[in-house]
Length: 73
Image (tube, rainbow, N blue to C red; front, side, top):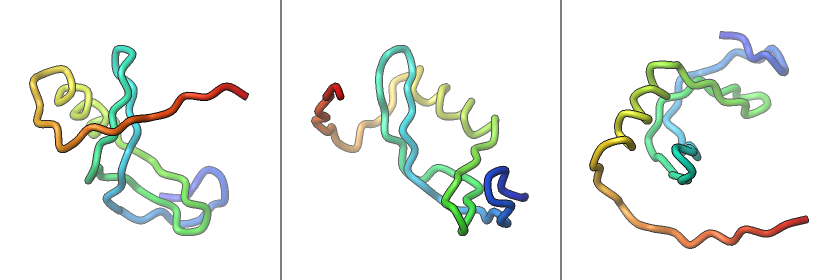
C-alpha cells in the first residue's frame, strides 16, 4: 500500500507497539504492521488491533515489567 504521508510503498514488518487499553499502557512485541521504509509510518490492520484488545482483556503472559517516567513540559 502507499504511505499517506510520503507516498512510499509500505512493506510488511514485525514491530513493537505501544497500546493503551482501559487506562493501562502496554508494549506489545512482534506485531504485524505495514511500515513505510521512507518515513517510518506504521499501519495496523483492524484485525490486528482487535486481536491485541482480546489478548489484553483476558489473562495473558507478561514477559517483563518496565518502570516509566511521566513528565510534564
